[in-house]
Image (cartoon, rainbow, N blue to C red; front, side):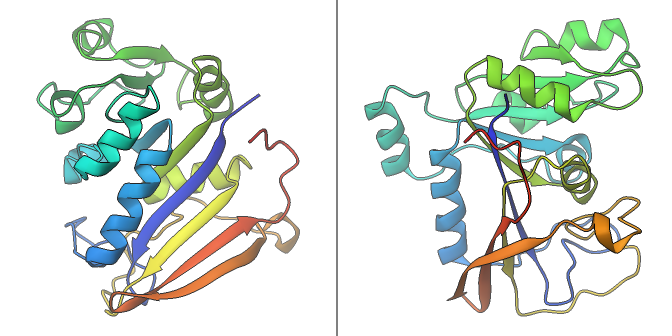
Length: 231
């Protein structure tokens, strides 16, 4: 059993998440920020990769006081569980994801992580070791489900999102497309990594919603073929 997994990104009109230097870019506006905040509030956990933590230092907290109240009224913590996929336990102890906002944190690492690093991080987060060289996402999401997580939001980066698509673990993909061109063959995209080679392996999507938002457009897709959804 695993959680329902939704991936959310904001990208430029040419499909880039940021510049080739991995410098964060404001792609969407206030309406999309509010939409994403609602998505966070409705999820049990939010996940990012270590690259996103090191590049952007996100807190992954719910920003709206009204949404925080909404969660409290339902007996939930103020913020979803924050999860970092971090094979070698490199998350800085001062990272916002560990220090800002109340709530639970999880660091998913592998056997490659140094015991002293996992011990230090264990002061701030629950440590889950899943895999030898790379975090085994199938095993990880099963463990998250066992802790009560039923709805998981994956926010990036491109390598982690690709790994979820590759493993067939994505149920919904929402994408805000902004009104800019960033360019750069080395700039990150929503699904970096090795990529599918054979057409029969492509992850097929079913378009659910198209909505003009801010100065761009929101696209919401369901994954067409995914027999392992638990909801």
